[in-house]
Every structure is written in C-alpha cells, then in structure tokens.
Image (tube, rainbow, N blue to C red):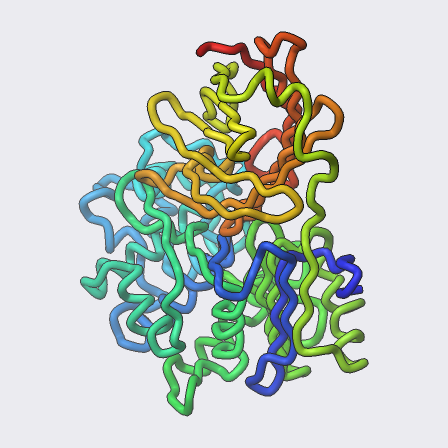
Length: 436
C-alpha cells in the first residue's frame, strides 16, 4: 500500500509510546517542510484557551461580549449578551453555520461575528462557524496582553521544540486563528503526543489533564461521533482528532497509545482504522517515500522555438495570473500579476524547486501582504502540448496545466486542472494572446 504509492496521503507520521515508528512522504513533500494546517488550527486555539484558563486569565463561563466593549456596544443582540467562551469552544454559539453565515461585509472577522444577529438558542445545537474561533484567539490576546501567536509559542511550541511554523495574518492585522497555521507533519505529531500524554511533555505538566480530557470528549452531537472543544470525536473508543480542510488530520488514539498524522489524506478518515492500523500491527518499516507522478514526454518540440521568450496576456482568472512567459532554453516559466513577476524553474524528469507568490491558495484567501511559497515544477512536451505540473509544498494544491499554442504562436490556451475544489474551480480553460 505504501511502497506502491496507493496510500491516499502526501505525508503520514505515526507515533507509538512517544516514538516515531513510521513516516511516509510523497516527494516533493518532506519531513522538514511546514504545511497548511487549515482548520487543525482551531484545535490549537482550544489548547491556547486551556492555558489561559489554567492561568486564571479567563473562564469558560465568561461572557464573550465582556471582552469587546469597544465593538459589542449596547444595546447588543440578546443571545450575544449571554454567549460564553464555552459556546465558542463547542460551536454552539447560536450563529448560522459558515455556509449560511451572511455577515455584514465589514472585512473585519471580529466585528462580523459580534455585530451579526444570533438567531438560535445558545448551547443547544452544533453549528460550524469559524469566525468565533478568531474571537476566541482575541479573547486570549486581550486577557493576557500578549499577541496570540507569541502566547502559543511561549506555552506550547517552545516547550515542544517547534520552531518551523508560520501564521497567516487577517486583513485587519490579527492572527488567522481559524485556518492559518503552518506546521510540519512531525511537529503536528508532537502536539498529538502532548495531548495523548494529557498535557505533559518531557516530564512537565504544561496543560491540565482535565482540560485535555474535556477538549477531546463528546460534549455535543455533531451528526457524526461528537464534538468537544474544537476537536472531533472519532470512531475508535476514546479517540479524537484535529481536522483541517483538504484532509489534514491529527488523530489521538489513547487505547492504542498512538498518534497518527495524515496530510492531504484524500478520501475518508476510515483509512486510518481500516488500513493503516492493521498495517502497523503487521510491522511497518520505519520510513517510506514515493513520488508524485511527473509529466511524461519530450524535453523539446517545434512549438518551443516559436513561443520561446514570448509574453502572453491571459484572460481574467481566479489564479490572478495576468501574463505568462516561457523560456525553454533555460526551462523556466515567468508568472505575472500585473507589474509583479516571479521566475520559476521547470524540471524535466525531476522536481525543481522555486518560490512564488502565485499560489492558487494564497490568491484566493484574505491574508495580508505578499506570501511567497515554495513550488516544485516538472514539465514535458507531449507532441505540441506542454504539460506542466506544479506542487505547492506548503499548501494542499497540485496544479496541472496542459498548454497549447496556435501554429504561429500568437494564441495560448491553458487547460487547468487542480486536485482540490475547496479553493478554486478544479477544471477551467484560460486563454490568452501574445502581447510582446
């Protein structure tokens, strides 16, 4: 299953009895790279709230509005005035779910949450709403007087030896605490072991075991196995997980004394119970690696001579790539966003690493400022079509571009395919014309 590359994941780390017993990486992913955690980030917020409760800075029974007198001014929504920190932790804030949450269009996630009417009774029904998690992070920040990312670093990341990470920033300048944390698979597994050991690390009790137990408990019915404090209960007895979009998982299995981390685990989580655990019981090797399939074909074509060095203006597209140019002497592609540009190497028969801001994920999200992400590219000519595959190693995006040109090279057509439809149209055609 692993050696032939059929495990539906780009990375996996298994820890048993506080030791890494197996790692799997699909090249070009690797153990030393951080990766978008997506909503796994929410579970880190639950841990941070636990620290603040342990320190006596806040209580789960505190009213949310009391921490934001500058925003939640009287008169305020009746349900909002009663909303507690526990309601935010359990997704029972009375707000509509994300997919029905209309908001006010302020561009400020905290104001959106606090000023939007709360239509449903508090503490009754699970309703997945992400803005409330950012509100939780700001409660911790306001109560502690420490910026949220620094607070998490000092109490969790530093003691666990986690240094290689990144937080996205929202447009209003606060930390993106609902979706924006990047960690490596190994470091996420460390956090899983910290939870498995009930908040203890290296012989020190960092977080109260009572908080860890409650966070991973079934407190509310979510239509599946149950929901705790921003953690999802799972099928095996006593197990729970931090789960993020694009199939990012950190599964804590107390009965098995094990933590399983899976990144980009396409398919269902049942893979862990039905395939991975039985496979482990059979005695896996310590480390395995397979590669993404590279484009197959030739290094050159007649079309390459015609379009080499030419710049094409592209029709408006969700990727925000306004122009594109190829240099097949150097095997490079230049991506433009109006006046900005980045040059990326293209490997033939190998993955070649570059850095780009033209990540299809960052193009669609709202973090503040320009984010450069590593991208691995391989390409090959298949007749007169050039196939270019781009793997964005810190996010969950894999792009395929099947590129054709008119006979005289004046027109370009890009048949674009993506592995993930959560952020972008996974199947579209982008046309363009030669401009210079």
